[in-house]
Image (tube, rainbow, N blue to C red):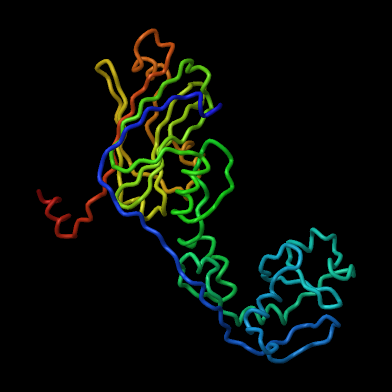
Length: 327
């Protein structure tokens, strides 16, 4: 479904907030062991200090890079009889042949390199995005999978976009590449118009990004099949992590002709995919018959007005909570 098949008239008002930007310099990695011993290219054991001019961790870290997939290697690290190494995932891909010398790999473990890796301490790979943490080599991968500084996926729902980045980068990407409407303020008023609403099943639109309280929020509106029933759904996503999203709440309201539906909830983090949020039904869901009733007329044209607001939850002290409980 083409995005221009839906007319959206938007207005918003609210407070202006300063845009936040983050940046950090990349710290150097360091190791507890500067002397290494691993199998050399001729099969002999080589021991010694890393060559002058090359930081020890850099040289060892390069040795721990799989030559096939270029990812860091973790046990079991395999090697051929000539000492060429590769990760266990790629071993099955190369049909038991060394990709460097074409010799048969067999089942030789490079225990020396695994032991060297155990002695390393390295910064998180997202240190350039602000993560200050340093981890033992074998703990680093687990941390990076959940690191709060890891890049975010593009939250645009109208296409399969593979762009990743930090929040300021994604905001610019949404504005410049996806041509998403940008508004400053914590309240909004949208009118969705479609001449033939029966043509919009399984259509997705992300219509607006809001900047309020110094944060960014994405408002989604779409149509899809819920079981056998066609429905419309509106929901809000927070451009940040889940623990930050919990500090905010939002409401959505749609109605007409003396009837209205109201939704209140917490915005979901864009760490959760668009499909995950939609499939959890965590938002304002409007049955198509009800949407056409709100539209009025002969019910052959969709004319929905969705209003809403975003607010920041008050952080109450324990004493305030106790007072509320007693009152």
